[in-house]
Length: 533
Image (cartoon, rainbow, N blue to C red):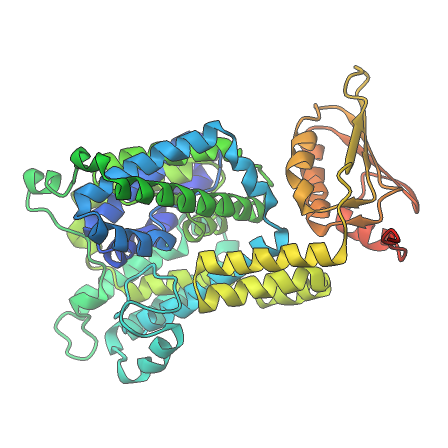
């Protein structure tokens, strides 16, 4: 794990700066103590990071659970009673993992996952625009269209003109210029600029700016525009920040309902994030989903026991980790230790970081998730890919994450049912019982994203130094999600010395450079006819 520490350490610093305000903001939006968000971030980094099978996923408190937490704390009669539900929710997640419910993650269409990433990227940018200009009425980490302040995403942006704060805006612009310069120019100039990440330089610059302009009436930055980490007066007051569950409330049926709700929503968000981060991962690692549920459940049990919010794997921190060059779970674990050490040793210094600088950091993260070129690419893939994609994006921007994904998933299912029928005998594999290294996979007439889990499992089971023949001569409709799986597998096949031969109506091709291009050329005009009634 520590062989790639030169990549993981700088990435962990970036993830730390992204995670800190989000942990605090989500706790604030949840109506919970601010320190509960930090606890969840620490446990998500250290405990879940260590137990998870994901190399680049980062866990912590999630904005998608904020509304549930806010209502639950009131309904259950206090934060300590709510913590019982967090502990029980973690135990239920462990049961989900034992029952191998993680397979659900394989049934989210690629178009919906890409729509989720793009929608989150747009939301990050839109939600950070007010913070960039010093209009800090909404807590960091919010992702719903309707805001707690009574505004919505777009009305908050429109109200910026009457509420611009000069100091935060100036330092935000300085930070953004540093980040763009670092990302586009300096990072290509030498290893030093790769080791010292742009976000670290931007944050340090922001702190220096705060100290230099304290006495300036125009450029000075008020406390409301800075990070707000709880500052203990001593070891006793630090320990007092931890809360503990009141297990006397365990007999309350409402506690169990809340626990199951937390377990279900947190598990779905985690599985969605796992699918998304695996797609973003340039090294095409496949995360074991059942192990992820076990890790998340363990993390939630510990978080609940010491006063933390519920934990999920989260895409904003995970994508920041990937974009910053994180290679292994070391970056996730180190970021957790950075959170822990910093809130103990330097909380006062952390409270000098301008929120506008962190908004600039998140601008870059959001833009890389929602590049305009992706819209053109999805459009060119055809309406079966584009419609679920765009519905997911619009749904996330104008509602929230879970509703947007649900809309995209519903549309994706309708599209599949409308355009095709599914042949249940989609895959025939032979040769793995003969020790000659030759394996043949024959695909049926139609293979859809419903078959992702089984195909991933079969491909992962192919041993090193094998010869794989993929027969698609009978295949009339091969879903783009399945083509992407083969594209990703080709990358891993080179590492495992697996030769691939595709047999199609067009002929035979060995180790194609791109499965996407191969199947694009091989696309047949003939489509199966529905049987006459």
